[in-house]
Image 1: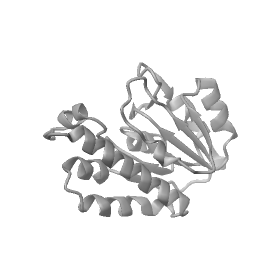
Image 2: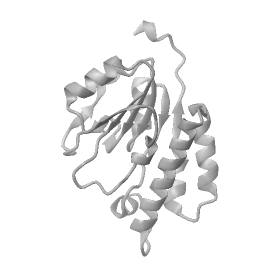
Image 3: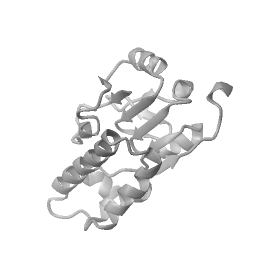
Image 4: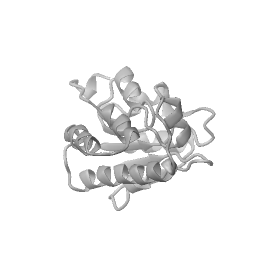
Length: 185
């Protein structure tokens, strides 16, 4: 398993709990060539974390993509865990199998952008809940729970939350199941 974690210089999110204690090779802000080499050499699971769009995973400066359509061939046939805004759209567009987030609120501005009302100390609540999300993903990975079950488990948690942004984040979690022979690509 490899973990690619792209952290922007002004990133207030902490999703490192996702891979805490995992038996994985971890790359924080790798260069494009290191990223592609790591993807090419991994045969099983790839975890991708950061900011992004339906076109891919942003670089650490947020002014371009470190992972995009040019890299899809390196992800085919692997289990992918994509934790960035609109990773689910990326997976659907390019036929990647795995667990993906959609738009995922990680700060006050994103809450406002999607039409949710910020509240006193919402930044602290967002940080706490995103750490909880990371912890739950980590626990499911450590327990070898099949990723096809993650969406239901996480959405059950969100149903009990008092926070509208948590329900928003979790309602669009997605498992993209691809039924193809990876050798075809």
